[in-house]
Length: 238
Image (cartoon, rainbow, N blue to C red; front, side, top):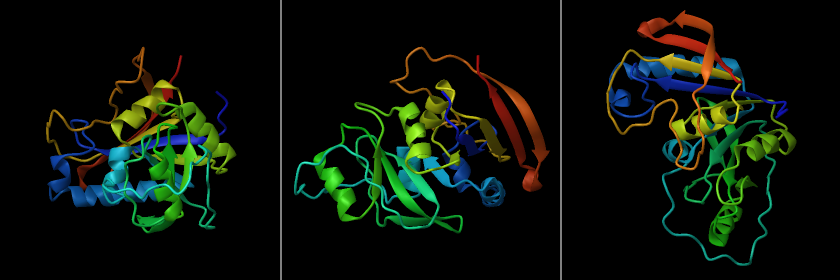
């Protein structure tokens, strides 16, 4: 795929590879988050993309409970507002579950427009909900997320040249399996939690068939403050 867009997976991880869990309640994590944020800003990406669970904890206010009744039958077509911010927060929500307070959010001091990525399985009522809040949305997939179509639309519809992917593990793995990640950036916090059920940097999706292991070339290793380590890798696609 000639995607003509730079996709960088940038994650903050514990020593044991977790990207959520008890590590975020440890006092040492605050300094690690600041280091992660510095690198996040250095990449200077026009878009930040995250999966449903990650977005529910960051750009959205959890999951929606009550939806408005749709005023009409909506065509499953893209609807993009232009707020002139030149920054997008891309929220993967194939089935329409996230609860948003605003159509513009701020993360690490940067304001950006929310764009929700839906499948065509989303309810008519959820489309009404997004329209009532003037929240932009894209369709990428009939029954589940089509990551190749999504990346094409990020370039062709939103004119994005660089996108940071910040998790979760299922989204990261899906993009990697489709050879869409150009660089992997990992800030390793000097903390371990060892929770079995917490997401890791890469997690296999139940919808992904014929998954295969993928090797990486090391681009850079840097010791940061706070005993954190920054690793940069390039995937070796075959």
